[in-house]
Image 1 (cartoon, rainbow, N blue to C red):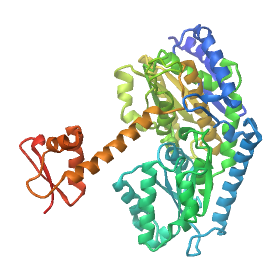
Image 2: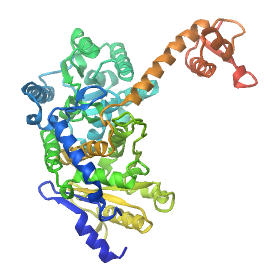
Image 3: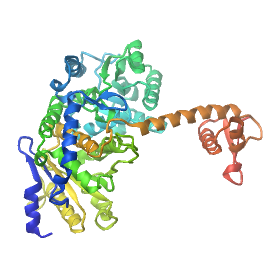
Image 4: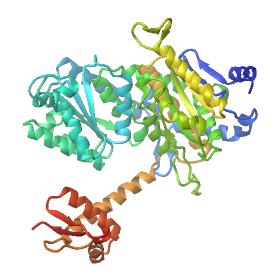
Length: 537
């Protein structure tokens, strides 16, 4: 396409919100001129569905739940006074709690101020806080933060090593004093999430071994009346903050899930919520040409033919946004990756998301993006302000930030020349307001896209299936252990027959036990199927 026609297309499809200093450019997506007209019936349906959702309709029919994450940044939208009061009261309590911690009114059991945070959660209960911490954090924050976001024992040990070893993090206090000044935030809606439960138990044990009372360091973010809520109350934890059943994990960062760690780190939660509310307001209008979230959703539909046929590559050109692609992986893939549509028809919907950051990726997988298989579209995230301090020239009249901008625009042009399509989203700088706006933009785009392809974007049956399978395997492990005895040992198939189990499952369970339980040993056979397992004599 000639540069003159590209310039004209840019003028047609560049949208700017002057009040937010935000813009989106879809001119490098090659949709036909009549695309919006053909999509109009779906667009009208999506706008109507969003209006109903925000008014309190059952937007998650499989779980018969309202979907209320938009109310979190504008409680006036909540469908009744009780919900509005719950949101507002929770936010007041969060701000007061954080202020009291910072002022030394709430202190650790040794009477000293808390200086560190250990957040225990998984999925949306960790990804949002991790992204926010990386995007907004600095050495000047009143508290630093660490994460347990898995059930990996080695992962737990690595985090404790970072707290333990002053050389790793530039600290001077010995381990016990650092742990003594650590506030633990445990996040789980049901309180029964095993990964989070395991992390909590490991942390409790670590505090106990250091002679510390865990409850005097702990805060719960959970559903009212959940297992975790009861545990925290019984053991005298410092505070409990609610999670609501109308907020899904992947859209919970503006609830207590995200706001508690944000406030403790000293970030401006009011500006964060205001940024999201401002983007919500701009993307609530039914004018497609001026609705950035609907434009995003339509570009996703166009790129993948409404079937997710192309991957979404997220390339933020800013180190502070390096975790944004990981955050969007959950938001987009867990929301849109569905087997069935709202009518129960098998559709296998979804959009794969990956990315890291520019210009790092130009030395990694951008080579394939330009010259390899054309199974993707790119979204560039541009941050116009280079740094908060004074500019430094690496060449005469040229800064490092000039190079970063040059790489972004150059890569965009090089990809387009090779027939690769892209979207560019621009924000002025990375701060609480703009990060809130970015998250809100993508949350609404996901909601719109779910309506465009007629799926429930607010449940996750595949995740539950994995949890059930894991529980079944753990039960199998106990059965297998009971069949072991000292002596010559038994092969996996022999054990499987005795308990009517899958021999491959038994084999892997035995391999795991032999690697981790000193009482279980394995004698290698000529083939893996001949390996014999027994109890050590």
